[in-house]
Image 1 (tube, rainbow, N blue to C red):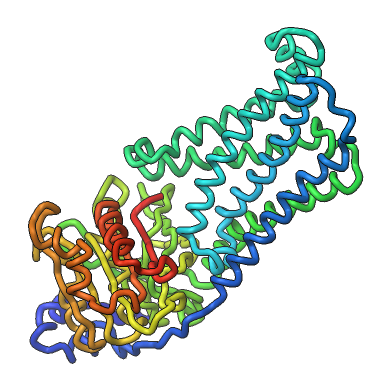
Image 2 (cartoon, rainbow, N blue to C red):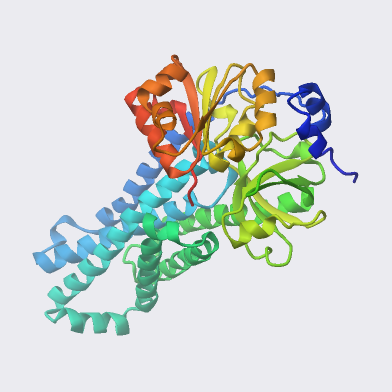
Length: 477
């Protein structure tokens, strides 16, 4: 395979005075492909919400059918039955939570990675509360019905129920993962440490399976309830294997990705160009991201998510990385030929999911990467707002200005510290209304650090921009 057509420093140096040279030398034939909006996200989301609630009710219905109305007598029995209900609902939420992070393509396409992450977190909070309630209610209920102390009943449970030790271990893991997911703690942890500790959550699924089918009254007796839950587990595990194992292996065997070139964009940022086989067949759009694993010394054991910083063209892929730690600093020293293992593409931060014919794009810092790629696929006439502390920190300046000219876009740099008048004005409701008087009739694509995202969202809410027209790709994991 020959070398892909890659940027050269001389093309960037003369780009402003000769944008047509940039067009031919920098990216070859830069064809701006129109992306048709899709409605699958709306219908798919509604369908999944309906299915979720239907199956959750069906799970509780198993308890109802197995429990005669007159069989519950006294406080002990009520606590025990409450423990059974919370246990079944918690088991269902655990499966839904794992499914949300299975990375199976159809789910990502219908819902989107960011919303799935939000659902995963919200389900996790409910799951933790239900599991703790299940443990307390069952223990106190059994103790009350047996007429013994809670401590004596706990000891009895440990020694008489088959899979109770595994259930307590699963609960401990769940509590630990929940604590590590607290936003303030998570932001202080290295990404790779958080990621590998979070993988321990899959042990909860395995241990819970043993506990539910060994000790669960509705599941251990065979019949419809047993096979209903077996099918639920099989479906989730199949999606997990497809999304996390089969899909990535198939993608990498087909495309054989390698580093083609590393280009310094600024003191802290580099662009990594990836070449491979049959890239024209790769189903990927501008605004999406992969989890990239570079098989070089010191880098192979970590995989990080990075968005494409140029629309796919069938010849190479580009990601742009800011040095923010040991791993991202090591990526600046990658050599051509290094093998790459990628998982994805994921995300609905794409032109395909727009609702309106016009768009406004807001980027901060290295969040310009997916915004820069989207400029190639969104309709002409877009407005681009790029937040940076100074002109020296602007990345892709020549490309952005050339694209703005070609796409009839309005490009505005917002420079200075967060307390300076210009940034404060630009991200206020009045400032945004001045920049885009028709903002409510535009889709808004937003990517950047939390401060920019929060300020932009506050202004957009004040301006009553419909939530369905706001697309976010924030910096978080």
